[in-house]
Length: 585
Image 1 (tube, rainbow, N blue to C red):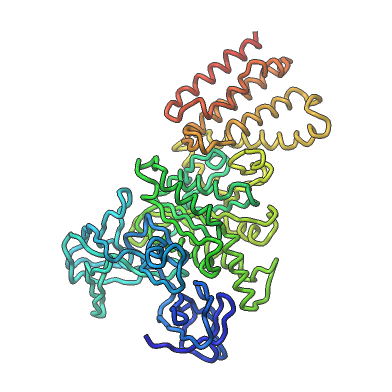
Image 2 (tube, one colour; image 1 turned 135 degrees about the vertical axis):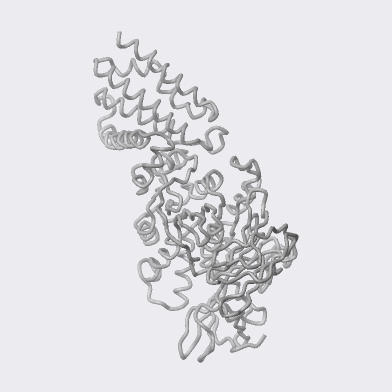
């Protein structure tokens, strides 16, 4: 391989070449004698700037830089699911075999296994006209995911050669197409795609169906649509990672992509162990059969952290194009932004707020705008739902990453340190959080759950809001001076907080709750509220109503009523009527 130029300067992950070169902007290069992976990020007549995605220790001036003539790209093909990659799509299991427990600089491994044979079924015949996105073959990637081989988006032509069904390796040519200019293109089981270029779609559709997560505070109070984007900001210890783990385990997306960008190694280890042990409730198979993990921990090279979320979103787009609904969890975008800040500092760029580069908002928008519910080039429908954790220092939501993330997401799940420290999980603060998807999802809720679902949800929110204002009075003068109507609001708000919003991830019946149970739980709680209101209006003291024990019993509904026996909830309404009707005699 011919080398163009040699290294002049090294500043951490930033390498410079003096003078004018033939390299292109965003071109992938190999740096030094060990051929470290890098990318051109700056060009002028005087120097070329490269960011290196590996550790640059022992790299010296004068070592060669090798061009590739192509942008930083991923290899997309069967074998991605179940795999664990680093930030630039190097499989960690293969890296371990090649270099041991500690990754050596310049270790080169293929992103997918090109020696493994797949049982491939060909879906086209000679003479068929194909265009970008069309499916020409498929194979079983895992027991629950069928991998569909698609024509690269900017390619079209007539099938002039076609293999028969059988076993093939990822690099084998199985179909040949000839374009209008007479050029022959070989189609294998895989293709390449640049990580910073969004894959094209035919049409962008409305986000009008929810991503069901089984988490009551999300599904009921602050839902996210399939194809939507959400932010989970929270300080240290508020449960960002655990909330994302719950969403990854239980949401109804077809494929989960979990990106740990800059997270602690022990948290990624926990994710790997837990995901391997969980049996997927949708399929009865291991959850890993539809999961891709990208592990770029805090001690890995900082530049690869910056690339990791683009790697994740490109994989999500690839499976979306097959017609799957994908969900990407980015944990955490603050660490990603810190990588941007570090590289920007080494480039001596003018800093903006808190030292972050001025282009932080545009980089965040590039990422979040790749979410969406789409009609693909091949006529299928798919979606990418993005859920990004944000780690503001000192739980300060006014810092730049949180504020700019709010601009590009329509769902905001604010984690509260006080709730987390009082062991209320998920620690999502119902006063600071919001979802702008409610109006888009109304028709879906009316058709699939109940026409009054959102009405009950609004009443829940108004009770919690009223409790928040009453707490200020109670903290000043105590609850004893409040009238019974307001005491009732405080009591029913406690039932909502503890019995509905608080959820136990380690309880078999409470870790995932179907929407129907969430709706019926709301019905029961509000039935008690309205019944108690009518009794208090007859001058019956609230102390007598509380003495029935019905409030405390409703707190335990989430544990006492199995998800498969929702008819038991009707008995709670009868019991409420029986106990409270005694006060109407």
